[in-house]
Image (cartoon, rainbow, N blue to C red; front, side):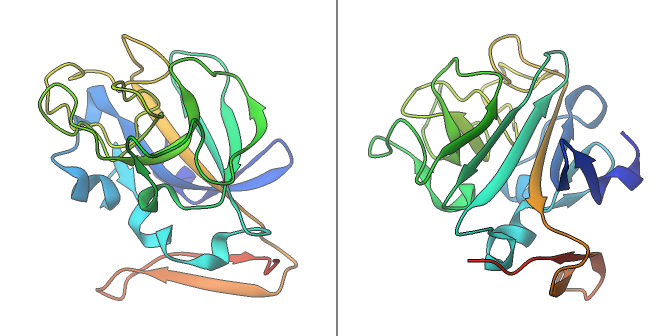
Amino acid sequence: MSDAEYLYKEFKGAKWLRIFYHNVPLGGVFNNTEEAKHSISQYKFSIIEDVSRDPMFKYRGKYEFLIQFSDVSGYNWWRQSIFPLFEDDNESIGTTVTGYEDVSISWRNNYWGGLAHTVRNSYGCVNCLLDGSLRSENYFYTIGNNNCNNLYSNTTPSISSPGSSEVTLWMRVFPFGYNSCRVCKRGNGISLFVICFAIQT
């Protein structure tokens, strides 16, 4: 995947902003969850923290996501009301995240229910930033694998073991011809991207 593809793409008639990409064989695992929130490199890329608090990325009250893994066919496309960083995958979460809606789902195994913030200690540590195996000791559909338990050093937990080499998380945006533009920046003032999208409630 080239550096240019990190901006956005067309898929199934929609515009998608790439907010996370991880190639484990070429980039290695993340050092910690902070790196998984923000990293600008070819094989470990994340702007999750950058977009997480901006309500302008919500469409009619919900975020819309697309997750894809290498080595397995298909994808999961869904909506949820709370950005994944702000809903913990703990014993009080339901079988799906708040406001979950299917759009097009290829995989439901291993307790899929949308993405949530990983807080469960599994095999001695918290293994990733986000996961989709809700109310489970598992952490499949992983975003931000840090391999702290030494189980996934060359892959990332995808829909099942032994995992996949790459994972990409996209967030839907609504560019061109709408009425708002946003320049997303880090603290150093460097623009990461400029994107136009709809304001809809």
